[in-house]
Image (cartoon, rainbow, N blue to C red; front, side, top):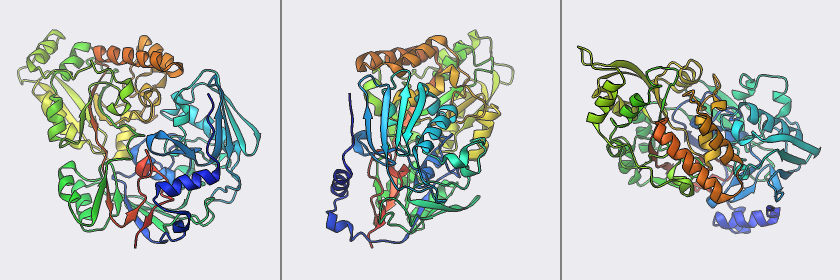
Length: 527
């Protein structure tokens, strides 16, 4: 199997058609303006080399690019790589790199940066530890050629090279440092269309137009101001009054979407979330002996009304999703897996059998419940109410984003946590990280926070990661889904719909499967 990109002229024509522009029209695109871009929660880092948090993936690609980008249908398009080829055995990926690209500090971008970035992703990225697990080396025969050599096939690899997922960072900035503590995380140097200017904590980030961008004439915007507004009601007001131009997720409470979508100055878009394949899950901390008892986990599963959760918390924007695999990845979903039935009588019986009868005060045991603040507070309230009916004394603790990350993945102070770990473009990078015992690493965000360890699951995940035959790989994922469902390894709740809100004067905010996680090099105001 071989894949080679279009030549640059072909790409330019295809992109012009995609944007509804002729080559002559492109010169007429209005330039200038400041985009006021909402990121709901303040990020902990501005570079996704070791992070997959939603706020970071929104911002990082504007400054730091990947080898490829992806149009609708996951069609790969050139970015820092202009051509690519894969050998028939799937063990050698060759990339021709874009010439005359400069880092924002003036240094040349070369294949050495690609090789070093792949090394960092393999060692430190929550999903990259699986995605690049079989990378033996990255050869750099010349400054504009990078060749990734694998020990085993990775059938998902060509979809994993977007800036939001696998950023290419400057070797000269990272070499010899701790990548998790490197200053680049808070003042990034990239090759992208926008240059980092300032980060005022608790307020905003400013990104300015890169005057030396490799794509002449782009970006069209002068500046992006990234706003952080934690209060959900305040976000709705800001869109309603025109103080914000663009945001996604959705960026406002789902209860406000219908009202805002009919305002004459606002538009909405549901495309651009395919690369994430978002999910909401409930994860257990297996270091808590109470939760190691399958009967307790099953009781919790039978206490939740999944349809009601979708209707009342998500206002119907999404699907009940009982399998670990998102409905967005339909070819891998086993349709025989159904939601655990709401059955409080069975749940109470299971807890009694597990040795946790109700005490005189009506409670059985205490539980600390956390929730990712990325739009999951209401879901946390719903789960608390459900478990309280069983006599479980739920202490629901809700934090700002950075505190949540620290207390969940470093301090491991939770008992159960509501998360939004996306499936991404393929179940191996999206799901393996949460259940693979080898991906338990203190301090690594969005990894195996549960400390779940099952050798049979490990083997299925490892086999599926390298199986080149599509049907055999699908069968492995079916076995995995059924095994963790029967084990109640986690509870998969809902696949929420993504919704982008935008001022109708904005053009080209969603040009592919990464949506507003793209570079924004093509965005402009239709003045």
